Image (cartoon, rainbow, N blue to C red):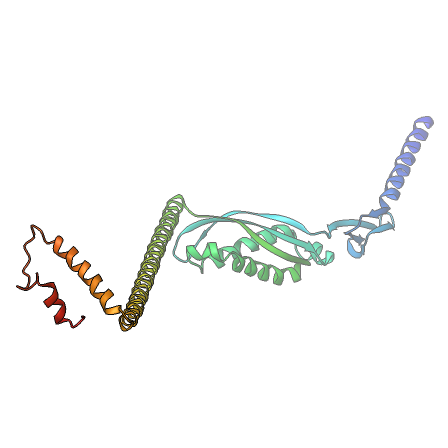
Length: 303
């Protein structure tokens, strides 16, 4: 009986020793970088453990919350939202937050992640309800900024900071999506038609400008050609006139010399006889005394 009692005492002391060992190791805390541990002493908040080595009092101190101070992303599940023009769209997003006050994040709210998601969804529905469907696709930054503003205001109490909120998808109903695709196709076709018409217009303008330039060049060329021909004809006439005047002057000078008139009469006589020979079988009205060369020459007073 005594042996059994001794064995039981040894077991009890062994259990107590084991518990002491476990509590001793639990009282030693190594806190990672960018983390904070909340310590309670006898059920009341005592202190916050920063990164590094810490020793607690066994049985009195207890780590109740461990907060990660790094920035984290939280998905906002898809939800139904109604736009101002009563169109149902499905919206989802992602929140980027970090803990700034680990005490408030631990004791100020039960679950700050869940609360942030719920508030983001509520704010998103409120903002989209003030916008028409077309603007919801254009005002993503407005929606994100409003959600961040509301979450920041609440985050001061929760000990968190909301860095940004991004909308991942805005999905309209299939009927609206088909209508939007048709509208986009119509706008694209409209722009294509306008582009083709502008191109055709520019091509016509270019062709007309080219034809105009060609006609002007042709007319300028024709004008210059006629000017050149006229100048050439004038120069020819002047040259012929100058040559004729020079020949007349030479003939007059020859006639004035001794024997000049006789030589002229001889030349004219030869020309006269040649002309008479060419009148054979010709019908030409001539003077009656044409055969009298001597009297005919006397009329010009050349002898």
